[in-house]
Amino acid sequence: MVGDRAVVLGGSVTGMFAVSALAEGYREVIVVDRDELIGVREARRGSPQARHINGLLARGARALEDLFPEITAEMVAAGCPLTDLAGTVRWYFNGKPLKQTRAGLTNVAARRPVMEAHCRDRVQAMPNVRFMERYDITGLVHTPDGSRVTGVRVQPHGDGGAEEVLEADLVVDTTGRGSRTPVWLEAMGYPRVEEEGTKMGLGYATRHYKLRYDPFGTDHSIVCVASPASPRGAICTKTDSNTVELTTYGILGDHPPTDPDGFNAFVKTLAAPEIYEAIIDAEPLDDPVLFRFPTTLRRRYERMGRFPEGLVVMGDAVCTPNPVFAQAQTLSALQALALRDELRRGIVPNSTEFMATVGRIVDPAWDMTEGINLSYPGVEGKRTRKVLLLHAYMRRLHDVASRDGSVTEAFMRAASLVDSPAALMRPGLVWRVLRG
Image (cartoon, rainbow, N blue to C red):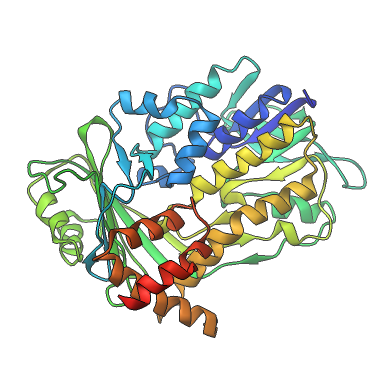
């Protein structure tokens, strides 16, 4: 053990990943959240994106299994399909389906509340973990000079209870995009953390169905990726309980309507006609729910000249990439593994160094997808020669992948964060792409 107590702020999937790492190194781990957590199997108020499709990329699925051994088999036994991102997902890019190939890029197609519940069940079984549900997090406790965080102030939510102080050797912020850490650090005398992002004007709506007509065949998912020529997309996937989950999206304010007829009309315009053909005769289980995502966001904690010991920040609280690329949960899982690696070496995490590690984990995924975001003419941002070359190369790569399964596999390995994005520039692959 490296310490007595760690406190995790936020009971989301990222929070559960963090607890899995921390439980090996601290005698007690406390999870604080303003929602009820234990026994909850549906979307929570504090997790609005849980109503929509959330996915682990292949590398994230491997990290999940590392953090919670055998959890994949557990979810499959509970009715969640196992997919291969290159072999059983039907991808449309620029209106063309990619050539499929089995590549071992597996993940489990569980709805976000279901995955969260399975992770939480594992965490609940850990004897040194305690949940504090329905508590507001009111601030950090720190030394007079602000050089170290020593705990957190919490208060029972909604009943006027007295504020409490939880002393901690380490506080881990996994509260998501709405994290208060930037404000708390400023109050402690630190400069405001640098933030960056891209205005996407993204909006997506989700609906669940029982199908009467099966458009999938031997596939598990159909994904129509938005493009500059057609800035509308969708993810339609089989999920637990024999249901189908459909999230459709548009950028720059072109959002799906939430009335059923308008929603159906939006889906009809997609480049994958089989999605509309399947839902038009299906039994809807709920009404469409819209979520607006105006900008991507990255907080550059790794660039701060100084950072308090006893505090680390993880997940969406650091980086909220374009959700269309489904990177967020995978990046959180990789950060949790990095934290666990430190603890297994018997090292008390150095906050400044760990935030630099988080930055390095985020960098490749962020750089790749922020560059792709700029392929839309209406999205503001600087398009360097390098970015323009990337756009041209990716259009060509997707075109060739519609005929060549090996190119599909190479692209999906990079998109799944199994390989570095730099792998897409290997000479052999570049030759196949340019040769066509």
